[in-house]
Length: 488
Image 1: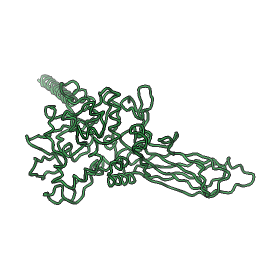
Image 2: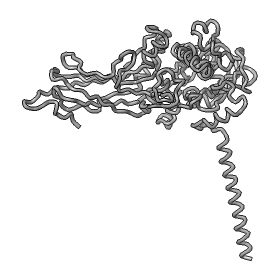
Image 3: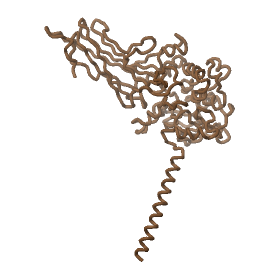
Image 4: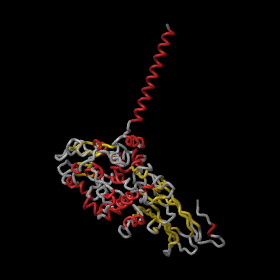
């Protein structure tokens, strides 16, 4: 009897364990197969879409629409219509790079080269985040992408990233390459998705969207994966995701859409935290070129708040004729992503280091601009893309198959760079050491190639600077200055 009970119990237990294991394995399989809302690595999801007919209707861009249909231009209003009620927000947006995303001269020149070089294979890919409405309404062709800004403004007018773009996004299907779902008439009439639960409008339906309050909304276009080689070309969202800002609940919107006291709409309630729509970034050069001077100044202010520079080590005493090493520390104190981020062909931060004696004689410098680029050996912070042969790419990003190096500064991180030079025996005391931290969104050489010489003068912004005077000690008789150490 006891043996029979034990046998029955053992058999039942075994079946229960086996059943539990089957359920556990099944649940794991289901999790593995289902798209994960917060999954970081999205290649499996992309692979599934590639196998589904119509899964990527705007291939190689990842945009989707209801039923993956091409949308009608009539589904969207001009942003000026939105501005009739959302006056202040419209004016803020109109001065932003978002507003000018399709008309950005650097982007359009690069797009023309990319379209020609790839025989149109990247046309949709590049365009889907610079004019989402242009892409999803079927207006994008190679001829449009290769035309001048003036021609398309007259014959193929399309918005950049406008009100109708962002507030018609109903969902996302991934975290890169424009993986948004654009749903302009989700309820059979104009529908706008936004961050307010209590918002109402006499003109359109208003639907609360938690997505619009989170950074993953921005990820769809601010993570860029090469559509054919899968190289992580830009990873601004991932940089934020892995930063202290993310862990402390500071979103992309916290910095780029800070709240202000006012009304989101003329007939709406007074609020303490209306999201601003300046989208201040780091492209003062193009904003200035486009005549958006206030927006350019906001970009400069943001850049100057992003970094700090200081001397990490200066020798206690320096002798004429001495070989000296000076270390400079650069800290990313204000950017919630790497410094710099985005657009790897252009973005560059660097140290321009000078050593000058009391007579004004500059006897050492590293970090000057030569032939439209930072000189060889410059202590810079930049990502470098390469082709299949390991050649660095400064324009032909469509050929990228690898990241050669990435020495940009992490959020809340720092880097230390060293400068070594010899003090002339004739130098007059004191000497002044200066380290300037500079930034430009793209080298002058790149702009001259794309637009022609003297079409756009790239602004070099000084993000931070530090100077220190060092007294030269008199050389003692019989002591060889060159043999004196420069400290630890």
